Length: 275
Image 1 (tube, one colour):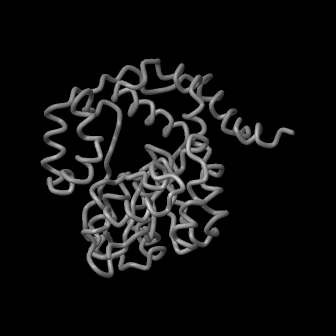
Image 2 (cartoon, rainbow, N blue to C red):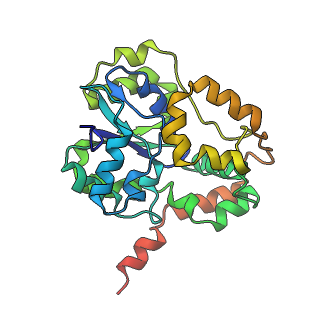
């Protein structure tokens, strides 16, 4: 029978390095990570544990005996849009799950998220206006708040928190920490070249029909795993328009406003505490 739950999940704010770490771990012979990096099983299947188990069984069917199985859905730390995800994971895994949480300098992460969404045609506003008017950008950078449910569910010893900047600047030491946490041999990770992926600004980004195909469950589960990554990337670059870069740096006033908001309690948490 296929494995019905992950051994570990890589979570973190979108554009905080989850794709890079996923690519690093996917090359380890003792680890199985599916081509569908973000299946969002614990969100899309809701509280129906039978559906959750069936979806994971399908996802991990190709895994070899003895491999650790994981995934990396950033939706799992997107409060308040998705709540109670850690509790679903606890009901499924009964405390055995290991959680790797990636952080990134918060303003840089917001800017990268903006360019990701702007390149996909989802964000028509200018950079500063978008970051100041859409609370998701700040909320996803409230790292302690986002990881708190996972620590409460599984305990701090089951959660490894990493800085994306350390993964880039101190790759060997960071990968050794990951290997110790997952109890795997670090050498296969260190033998391969660094795998930094998913830089947003100016990146060719699928839109329209191509985006609908690439993001469909059929493509992610049936096609993606059968196409070599190099082929997938060449096709994507060939068929996708290159995103226009209009503004990279934030003005000081906007940056200070965002930092002040980060220091405040989330609006949803404040509302929950009100009588």
